[in-house]
Length: 313
Image 1 (cartoon, helix red, strand yellow):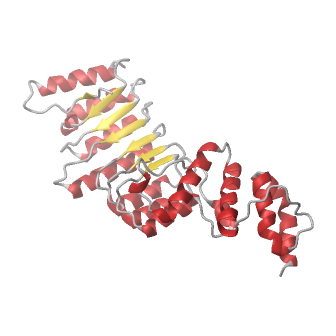
Image 2 (tube, rainbow, N blue to C red; image 1 turned 90 degrees about the horizontal axis):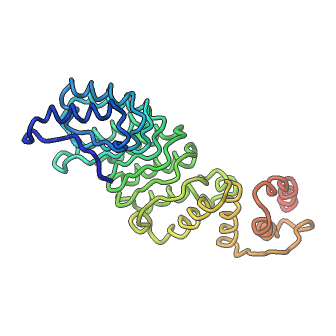
Image 3 (cartoon, one colour; image 1 turned 135 degrees about the vertical axis):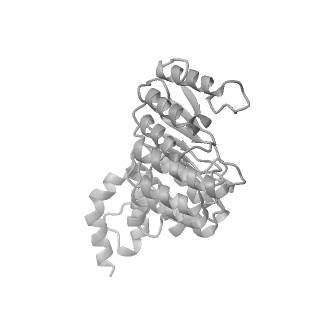
């Protein structure tokens, strides 16, 4: 993808004219302009205002990349508000200089929050290497809790740590059912945060918690070893596969339940009858159900299963 970048340096001839040429192309709804880079053009209030006006009426833009710039954040918010009226579905924020990580953190988080709040067509947001840190991850997770449009969030190398990972895990397990991809490579997440992320999609502490887990998310990573250790890796990979291959949450829960029964109880029965089973046979009962039924059938059998549990008390 050749991005049409408009953050031309002052050393280049007639920068303002070049900016105005770009704005005119956006305003004319140029069909050959599906991707736009936005940078130094925001330094000037006049060109920023003209760009916002041009963007608002554009229907061909699909992708936008924000480059590092030193302009007023009000100029940025003006363009973001205009983008919310367009068909742009993918936005990338190029990381700020490593020399100014705190500024980059504030900028990237502001971008992410504003985009998630306003951009109804946004399906992918890329904030790789933008220094958002744990606080930025927490802020984004709060906004994403009730978001229904974003499908992919890329946060590689943002140093979100365990605190940020736990916030994202809580959002995924209890709220968000839209995200299919969240890339968290190289974020300094230890075993504590890894377990929280695993439990978001595969909580085997009880059947109720397993059912509440997220059955939509299909990936946490580009490279699994950059996020997870051996202790949770297999559970995560199986859960991703179940979420990806199953057509419904009910089917995904059934596949995960089969793993719980096999891993915890060593149960993998196919043809056993459970109608007269004693309570001590409950693991085997559930093993049979997991092998032969989808979750809807498990719901229908709940009264019987509860009766078996009561008999064993």
